[in-house]
Amino acid sequence: MALREVDFHIDSGEILGLIGPNGAGKTTLFNTVAGVFAPDGGRIRFNGEEINGLRPYELCGKGIARTFQITKPFLNITVLENMMVGALCKEKNIKTGQRVALEILDFVGLVGKKNLLAASLTLEDRKRLELARALATQPRLLLLDESMAGLNPAEKMLLLELLRRVRDQGITLLVVEHDMKAVMTLCERIIMMHRGEKLVEGTPQQVANNPQAIAAYLGEEYAAA
Image: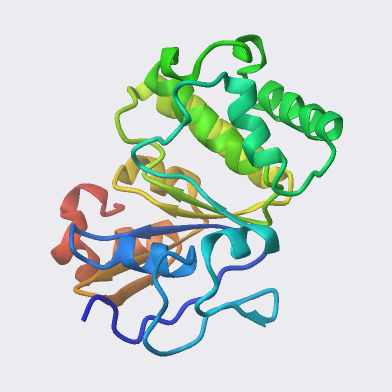
């Protein structure tokens, strides 16, 4: 079974990390929440409403957005046009949608590149565009899939600060991430999965010192003194 009796909640305005070794079930869980897969059993609730089986576009309309580990911009249109795809999910007026798109591009530091083709962007800027396009849908819950992958340490620090600013705007973050330093720095609570099950849940310090987490995934490197 890809997932077995995984039960958790995420509070409004929280940054929750989801970690574990390859094959633990993180991506399956992520895709189930995001509407890519329909669960065989159990319930997924968002703002008091059961959302089992809804498609990704339906969930987007309800306030759930996601990014991908491998960025998926529309390469042959501009950065601003990419943003309009997201903005027009909620805004039905072109002028209003463009205003929203430009405000978010400014927020993520890409407004100066709005007229460039997405294909010309660096990996770091593609990551920012991926985030910005999701933000343009005006989400309440944002699912982030390996946002740090491929970035150098300086780029990671800048992205971490940006994600904190996103949360400060009242957006809840569910973060799937392999970079443990980033997870321990960013997240207020962490869930560790192993073989399709929730193995450990707690604060970064609690998880870092949990013998099961150390044995299954973290090793002694992250154990706090």
